[in-house]
Amino acid sequence: MAGTPSTYLLGTGTALPGEPVGNDRLSHRLGIPSAWVETFIGTRTRHFAVDLDTGRARWTLEDLCTDAADRALADAGAEPSEIGFIVLATATPDALMPTNAALLADRLGIEGAAAYQLQSGCGGAVQAFAVARAMLSAGESALGLVVGGDVCSKHLDLAQDFRELPPGALVNYVLFGDGAGAAVVSGTPRPGTRAVLTHLEHRLAGPGLPPGQRVEWFGAADLRAGGLPRPAVTEDYKAVEQRVPVLARELRDTLLTASGWRPESVDYLLPPQLSGRMTERITSELGQGFEWEAVSCVAETGNNGNALVFLQLDRLLPRLTPAQRALTLAVESSKWIRAGFTVEAPREAPDA
Amino acid sequence: MRTVEELIELANTHLGTALAATDAEAELTELAEWDSVHLLRLVALLEQELGRPVAVDAVLRARSLRDIWAVAVGT
Image 1 (cartoon, each protein chain N blue to C red):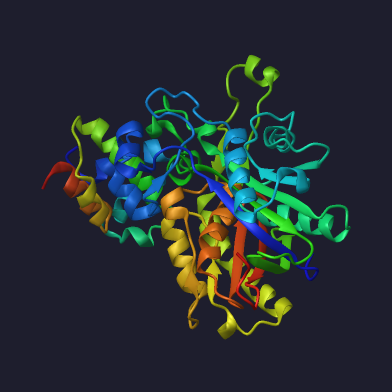
Image 2 (image 1 turned 180 degrees about the vertical axis):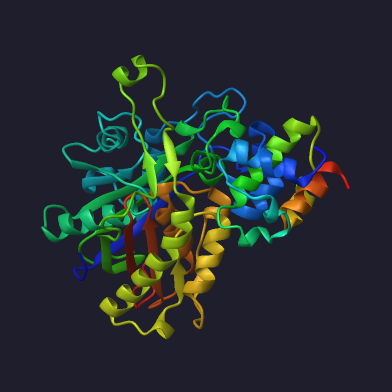
């Protein structure tokens, strides 16, 4: 799925729960040495919706998405009543039903909108923008709200002794964080347009391969059958380390070809956000030979899945000057999805 | 824990690795089934076995299983 039409980005907003949690704090709580996290993961801080001392959930995904959406609407200068549809992407909904998309509409006071929810990971933001683009080009609404978020701490079992975890489950304790992001989009240019999403692509890229990440869900029958039947989240981190750089390179080249952009004309790279260390490595590989400024967040926010691209966009937009260009690349390791888009600032300085 | 062979046996028993005694001197980066998560779990196992903390910073600088053993036993 690639090509036009353009999607106009009117505003973005993000929400990260509570104070940043550093590696020393994480080490103190979980017993994983902070020096190890710094050396091999390279993520310095993350935010958790859960209170690390009490284990009590302080924010729901609904809370975070509402805060992010409120900020995006304010940034866009738009009213909730103007929103015709919501697309929300997450791997960690508060419940399977009702959807967080529907609950978000209620919290924002949006009536009669269409609400879609995507079950997705790191590629979710791009998929949500793709659905929004299709909705906008069908001409059904003038404005849409695209949202992505995850509360990964749902899977952070604070009573777990990490020494008993298999490696594929252990890494998740130090990789992930919580957060949400949102963007207000339009199918036609409006005063105040911050940036334009031009070429967008997302496709499955691992035919026949085992999943790189698997997130389970359990029902009452599973629990009655004797506790959790298997780890709730597992990651084949070696496969991730091998495949993500390859898929990111392919995606970079595909987007450059589709957009007709010369690499020298690109100003910013929004690279895949895995861990601080891996993102550093991939960024230098992807941008080798080019003067692309990287826009990353994972070392400060942890990997918060569906929120990542929004957090990066939120950091990109204030830096964009007229006609500047950015490449956004995401790779989802679940069943290997490469997802990205090209972003361009309007040629004239945006209206205030 | 008197020898590096005992450390290797500890790893094989608890981490599911199949390291040989001859791997003691090999560069960790050259051990096909070794990775940073194994290192983390080995540190925890060593602390449990020895009943005292192991200097993680020094373990992170180790280049071989023998280096790790040396740090763990404080030589």
